[in-house]
Every structure is written in structure tokens, then in C-alpha cells.
Length: 254
Image (cartoon, rainbow, N blue to C red; front, top):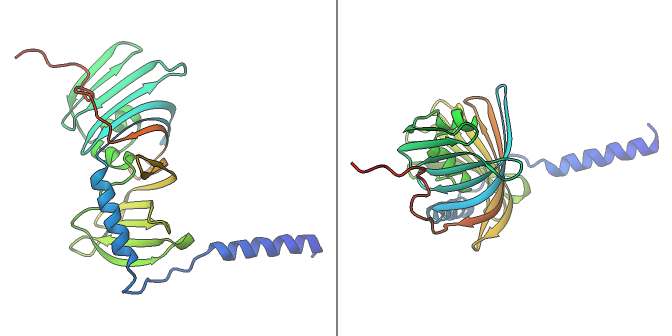
């Protein structure tokens, strides 16, 4: 093998070896799992609402969407999505208060309203999540699940840790990865039989309101074979939201 090719091969091998972290359980007295989970729960409890602008890319079975949106969300399931056109004009607006939704399409002036149902976001945005799941993920700190317990913790790449959280029957329902700075990097939600429901990756952390916020969120959803990438800018955490932000048309008298 020529000397240059051998050098390249050695460098690639060395790089690969450095990047692989063997899976190894953490010792029982390692304080990080409890500390990281407590920090996650506290941050999720504090982060109740968000307003911002996002670039959204969705790829699903035979469907692709690219666009800019104004997003306003509030726990547990309040959501306002304004889909913007190339020149910033509003193309559509979807709002839900968790129980009912309203949808306006500017192209034909169409208006729909009704009870929230599990397929609502799939029909509007080709994202197979409920409004509550979408709000949870868009806030960057999905609720960890109070009834889940730690059944395992291992080392992860870059000095982070991976934690498995199980239900009362012992089935792993959440698999989470934190980096060395205790920031949430990866969350996987599972059915009781082990099938993945969705998986989210959180990147591009910057401080917003004094707390780290992931400005890039990637979501893979098994239902619909969907992948969404959301890139935020101009984010406000826990803003004061005006009355009626989650309503398009006020109900008439009676």
C-alpha cells in the first residue's frame, strides 16, 4: 500500500476508534442519572409556553413540505401554527385549545372547525402526532413521565449518559440521552411492546431567557413514516400570550 494511502487509512481508523464509546453500565453510586432527570423535570415544569419563527421540513410517505411558520404553543395542548408564503404572507392558520380546532386557508378562504382528533396534525401538516405530543416536543423538554422509573443507565458519546425509564410492568417506555452538560439530546418514546412511537433529537442549544433551548429539533414518527426538522429563530420562552391567541373566530352570543 502506498505510504499516503496507508496514512489516510490509519487516520480514519484512529478517528473511528476515538468516536466509539463502549456501552458500559454506570456504577450504582453515580449521581448523574438522578441529577439529570431532576433537572429535566424541573425545566419541563417551568417551560409552559413558547412563541417563535421556525423553518419546518417534513418528509412522509409520498409527501414533502418545506416552509416557514410562526408557532405559538402552551402546555398541555394549545397550539397556533401560521404557515407563511415566500413573501411572508399567511397561507393558512391552525389553532387548537386542546379540545377544539379551527383552520383557515387563505387561498380559497376556507374555514373548518371541530373537535380535536388524533389525525388533525397529519391532515394539516403531515405530522402524525397529537397536539399534546407536538406541544411537548416543540417546547424542547418533553415531560419525562412521572410514573416511570430508572432501570438502567450507561455511558454515551462525549461524556454523556443514556437512561432507560420503564413503567410499572418493567417495559422501557422512554430512552433518553443527555450530554455531559446535562442537556437533553435524544428522547425515544415506546409502546409497552417495545415498538417505537417517536424519537426526537435536540441540537443547536443557545440560552433563551437564561436557560438552554434547542434551536433545532428533529422528530421521527413511526406512524406515517414521518420525519420533521424544525429550526427556530426569534424564540420567546413563557411569553405573555394575549387572550384569543388560540381562537380564530369568537363564538357568537348564545
